[in-house]
Length: 298
Image (tube, rainbow, N blue to C red; front, side, top):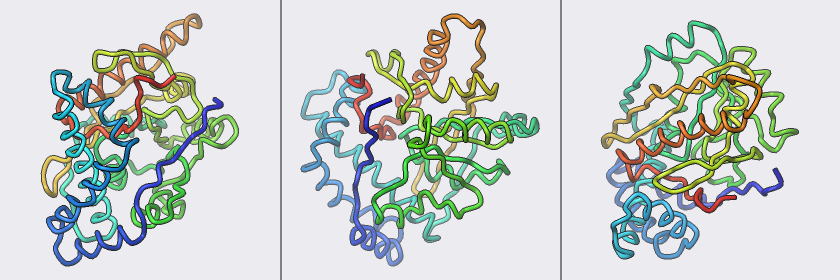
């Protein structure tokens, strides 16, 4: 609870201006070309990104040499950059992406009940782009996220725009992590989105993740069990130059079987979520943008 919450400050107004310029005159290919040089800069000089990337990659590719892992860090950084550009292209209206949704029938059943639910995202794939396309929910989505303090990033990506009727913001810095507001919106039948790989004030539990012990927060599952709402895992993957797939098929329904050993029951749901992420990263190894060593996190 006392651990300081930090926000990465990457990007600046001039950099985003150049990407928009390339997008407007050359489309995605031109912007991706510019990205090669930008990615090289981070690959050479961003020590934190390099360190946390290798923490993931050495577990994803345990047989690789240090040189291979170092080269794959560049590929991972470039992959994130591509999806960041896609987000800019989408919000700027330059490109209209073709997005395929998996699990629409499951979603329709949940929507028909008029119950609230939790959308559990992670720093994987293009979760921001996926969120902009969730009009079919016909519900207001409240994002439990920190206010972006990098003005250039906020302006370019249109993050935390509280004036957008589709989204609301609940800050984890509010009293008790904003839980009162979260429960209020869930009881009203709205959707609440949590980042499943960031604690934001909640305690974490130890789970098996990529054949090692890691820690993930259980807050979203504790709230879901208390309010009796389902947890829908949102997985977004880039499947082509202008195509994406958003998977809603992994749904967890936390419900305490007894009042005893609640933390153990929470751990089981968190483990289920960690397994879902692990399977996703097996299929899309360069869609993992944790940039946080969950294996060393206490």
